[in-house]
Image 1 (cartoon, rainbow, N blue to C red):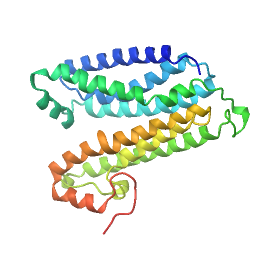
Image 2: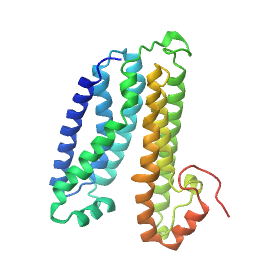
Image 3: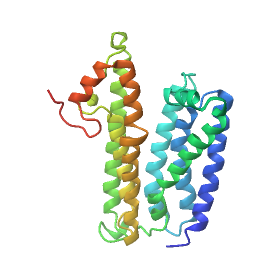
Image 4: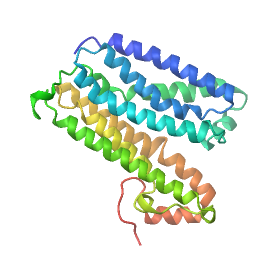
Length: 272
């Protein structure tokens, strides 16, 4: 492996500058939910920076860059056009932070939300680093350190995750578009089998990205840290716990019954 210092120093500088611009945008709009738009873009930007410095070939770099940019543009575009451009009220998470931070809201949003998310994005970057030092050629066959087996497996998981997340979003939108469903719990389609199909398929996307360079070198097994870390974030930190906190506040016993019958993360048949 080449020197890790220069590419990661550049990635840190990029992340700091990008998150500073996102914070300024949120401050001027008085809506810090813009960080959700920036989350995917900063990760894709980090991947691009690391790829630029890597000594691998572009087959390997694009094997990871293409899915991560598809993921980032889909996620950020969806959130921008449905939450920011439409002047949707600030997400409850950030409204809660405003209350907690008081007169230090702007400085604490910068350090505790924007810079923290930038740091988390850097922690997710191991697949991009290992792919950037990989000599992958399409004519080398499936097996071996330069083989394409894990690219095919990774891309299959990635496509499965994108399709599943799209279906979950469609099911939720269809449920919420019916006025009589206001205050009820969405339990149709994929939401019948997991309380958070969007988070589950988001993790599948990252599992796909994470496994792509995993056999490129012995140390590239560290690439699996990204989907493992994403699972912890989604299941135990910023995903499921926040979503369920507000669902319990707004739906009460209806959501408690949903919790009793339906798995939180991994899809399975509902209990009776």
